[in-house]
Length: 243
Image (cartoon, rainbow, N blue to C red; front, side, top):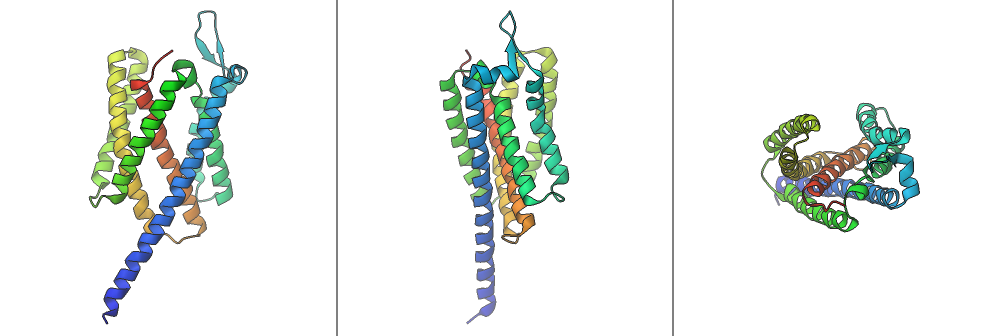
């Protein structure tokens, strides 16, 4: 019996199992965060009293953020930077707690979509986003093609997209907004496949149950969560029915 070949097969099986376990945990926490975000966004979006804590409406019918609304709007960004910079020093329970808090604050922050779009179109776009995300996740997980260079291109495109969005804040061009939204969908479709493949490879080389592995699970869940949320928002800008 060729023991060397047996060891290679055994090693590949162990690596595959570790990767599957890691990815299952990543998708579980990502899904939990999306549920939290969706529930919080819905309750703030449909409850006028809750919404009044975040936004007020003036005589012309235009909405403005309250002081609390501004805090809620910028808190997720602060939390992302905080988690990224302090991940190695933070304990797993603290990182997990911040991640779940981030998901809740994102829900409150995103509740504005219920003021701008119909509930039916929000639901249909969410389902479409889930389908597209799931398809690209499968592609990223199963493809044998190395997506590293592709991921670098998508990352550069993302920076370009952010600059274009900043410029359009002053230009207020509806045509440019449409182009930005269309490109945004393509970018986050591509990033989903790349990030899933990247996380699959990371998971294959980790020790199951270790503290560092648990923290990387949360960071991976955050990565994919942001891919999904951005894909959803760009699709909503393209296909959402405005009130």
